[in-house]
Amino acid sequence: MIEAICVTKYFDAIKAVDKISATIKEENVYGLVGSNGAGKSTFLRLLSGILKPDKGMVTIDNMEVYENVNAKRLFFYISDEQHFFSNATPLDIKKYYGVVYPEFDGKRFDILLEQFGLNGKRKINTFSKGMKKQISIICGICANTKYLFCDETFDGLDPVMRQAVKSIFANEIAGRGLTPIIASHNLRELEDICDHVGLLHKGGILFSRDLEEMKISIHKIQCVFQNEEDEGRAVKGLDMIHFERRGSLCLITARGSKEDIIHTVGIHNPLFFETIPLSLEEIFISETEVAGYDIKKFIS
Image (cartoon, rainbow, N blue to C red; front, side):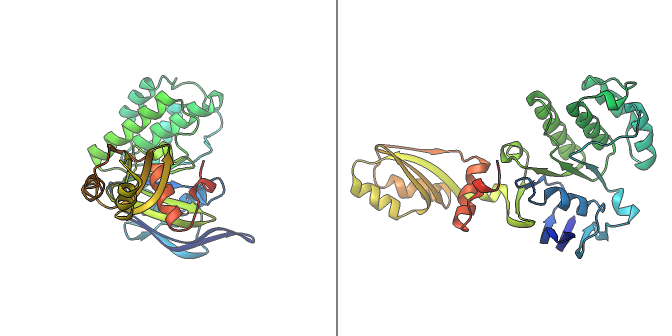
């Protein structure tokens, strides 16, 4: 388990991270979402021990991470900007990480290199941004660490490669209990992979919830009633978060169990009624609007 306890980080007069407290459980995919400058990269660098908190503490499996070799062997960090040794090839990088990480799987590295269509003998500084990101991902997977920190990991990858990487992550989670922590400015990138999502804004966690809990507690429906009286009674019986009308069609986002919402609407004899799956972005918009924030200002 990873814990951040009231972590604060300054860069001169700029407060990049402001009293963040977070618990990241094992074998969960934790998503960090926020606009550019929200503090995602700084928070990941604090988690990985690259930066030392000015206040607070970060622990990995009950070990403080900063300047702790034993703690750092538990994770692999994939930064947003890829950095490799000058003139190094992927095979050179494989040798390096084979020394740094005792469980590094060199055979799997060769297999993934071939599957990704990358030349192991070509100098990495001649690769495109997306290809460099692929090398980092391969290294991260083959390091066989317990945790994987990913900063905008899908940025720069084409759609096919994004799905391939997500599939690899899913297999690692199911196969050996990998725990990825993924920072992104795009909720849609995290929707089909995350278990828990935290929204960062101006250096602090604005909102942090378990995705499955959110999905079962908020629902979207569209319906048409016979008259305004039936509509009014149905709406009054719902714990409504959002209401929109398109002609005679009502679009309602409400809090509660699916069964209760269906019952509340159904007893008023709607002419048409169906539930619609909510996207992660719609869930976050609903939850943060209730808290008095407009998430659309914070994410793309």
